Amino acid sequence: MFVQTIALKDVKFYAYHGFYPEEQLTGNHFLVDAEVTFTPSGDTEDLQHTVNYEVINSIITKAMQETQKLLETVVRNIIDELLSNYSFLSTIVVGIRKIHPMMPGEIGHSFVQLSYTSSK
Image (cartoon, rainbow, N blue to C red; front, side, top):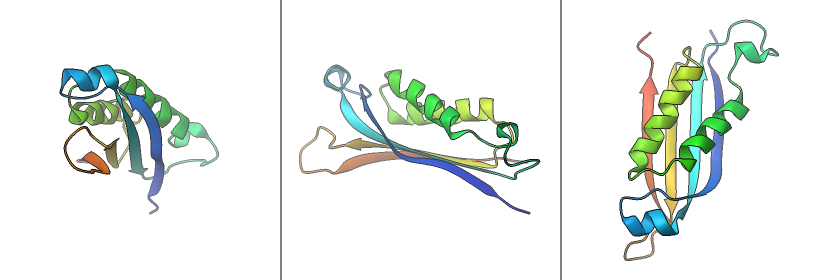
């Protein structure tokens, strides 16, 4: 049996997520990673039998445009939408990095990641 992986890495956004009001006003740079796995069936040249990474990108883009206080909410929304579009997924891993978050010190990025595993 084969397991197929489809992923987008380092998808860049400027968005307005953040717990504090000033974060939602000034915004920040973010990088998003999304990776899904599944067991392929049928013709792999047919988009009906696989995951279209353009769809993954549109799901991520929509979620990043909807301001949230917590990155956990953004990640969960992405996972929920991926499952809504592709119920056959075995695993999903989505992570968001906030580049240089506003806090003391020189911080490269903060990171939030959630993983989903099918019970099938």
